[in-house]
Length: 123
Image 1 (tube, rainbow, N blue to C red):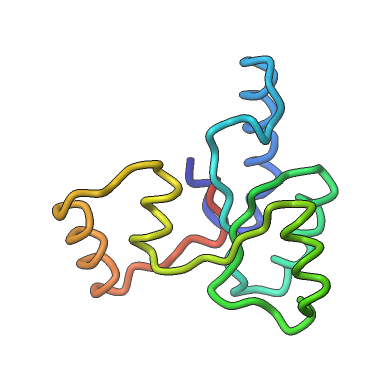
Image 2 (cartoon, rainbow, N blue to C red):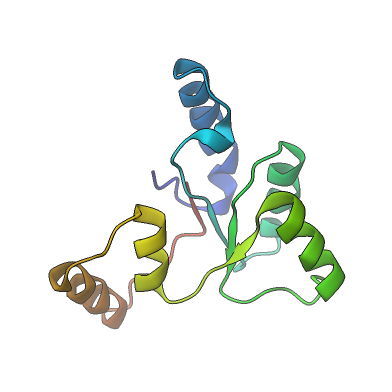
């Protein structure tokens, strides 16, 4: 589920909460992926809000911010399963839980070459 930009995190959490309630599971038990791209400063506030809500397994990138010292990062990894993003194709393989065939990989490469942007928040 692609929720668009960072400012849409509230709606994404509401949808995830409704799905979790409908399936009688916790949000972290749903097969959803959340990626926060650090293009805007408000992403830090969104990250803190999501951590406060207990959301785990977040992916951050394209690079980690300077305030994420090794100790802070280790705490986030250990307590919230934070992961850095990597190469788009590799991240998609992990997120989708499958091996992509060449046609899928080629399509991603074409989109990237044509200037396709990564969304700020995906879930």
